[in-house]
Image (cartoon, rainbow, N blue to C red; front, side, top):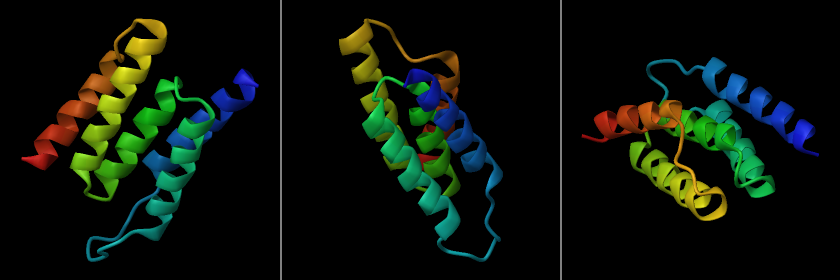
Length: 103
């Protein structure tokens, strides 16, 4: 099951990075669909950091930095409570991007 979820995480993260929107589009439905898929991944495995990173990237892409910051907080809490660890450097870098976009 873990191997299947890891493959799903890689697929979702690849999609979330690779889907783009035109500059005049207010909403990008493809990216929003990807965000929903990543949310399902987190529901399936709430300790898979790649799912959270994919969702943070999605929220960056659709200009919802506050939502991305909330996801980082959820990741930090899940990892801390369940595994006693902190998010990776990559997750912290995504947080910085989200915070910059929010200000």
